[in-house]
Amino acid sequence: MITTKNNKENQKTKVVQNLLAAMTLEEKIGQLFWARVPYGNQIEDIQTYHLGGYILFGKDFEGQSLEGIKALTDSYQSAAEIPLLIGSDEEGGTVTRISSILNAPFQSPMSLYQSGGLEAVVADTKTKAETLKSVGINAGLFPVADVATDSSAFIYNRTIGEDAKTTAKYVKSVVQELDKNQVGSTLKHFPGYGNNGDSHTAIIRDDRSLEALRQSDFLPFEAGISAGADSVLVSHNILSKLDNVPSSISPKINKILRKELGFNGVIMTDDLDMAGLANFVNQDEAAHQVISAGNDLILGSSYHTQIPYLLEKVSSGELSEERIDESVKRILSWKYELGLLSTLEK
Image (cartoon, rainbow, N blue to C red; front, top):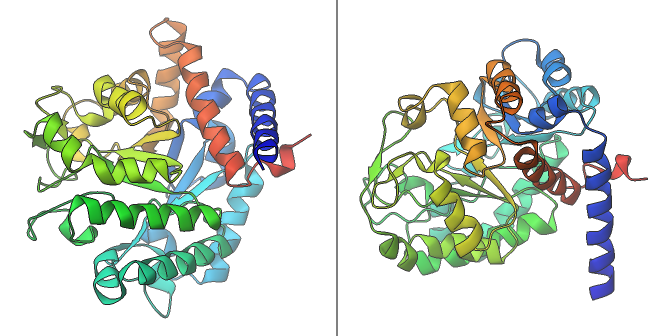
């Protein structure tokens, strides 16, 4: 068993290294972007910017059928030299894009947990994974690993409404089920929303101590990481006792994830268009700071200016190609795990 696992790891390393060695700097930088599907030029942008992937939002499902979405994602993959991460937010309840075209919408994790415990959650995750895969979506941007004790808190209805230890069991179960089905998992929103406000609309400062987070909010993230989570999404909330910048551009937050929690997978940002970051720093410089902080994937829609900006930063020596290579390796490794690079194996 160990030999098989080692062989798989060796094969993955080989495929990723060979791919990386053949890529231009422009292609590498393109991989760092998991972009909202643009309103126009969807196919051209995949080819021009060498994007790492597309995220489908509500507008992309409007008036569509499951067959239509499959045709759409197939057309995106056909245009890409390196297969794309194709995602949509599929937490269930108030945050699910595909439910608008399903006969039975996906319920919120809280409803599922309250009605049928972890068994109901796992069964739902399996159905969700199969549905997403059937239309060419390979990552669902869930589970929510946040803990909120105040029922009026912004994030509360997207959590299971339980304490950190129970939430940790929930996160572990979801990650394991997604892994079985080869659909990408994303723990969000590190370092944990708690009872704080909405960073879609404002800059949020979180005054809790690191110690308080370690005893509560970090537990579901640790459980997800131990269970083999593919990725972690970092919020724009400012952890004011640790840093004076949003978590998504904080090297200190990145270090906690990498060193303290031992996470070696893909770290992505919350959407760069959200006010929690957009009101703090401009889009282009935000992209630079995200990567400089050690993160891997940029979520947003300003790639057409951010990619040239990152290229300039490499030319000026402010951003090293080695830093970019580290992230691209992690992104390609995730794509390998999702079975996306099988056609590229020699």
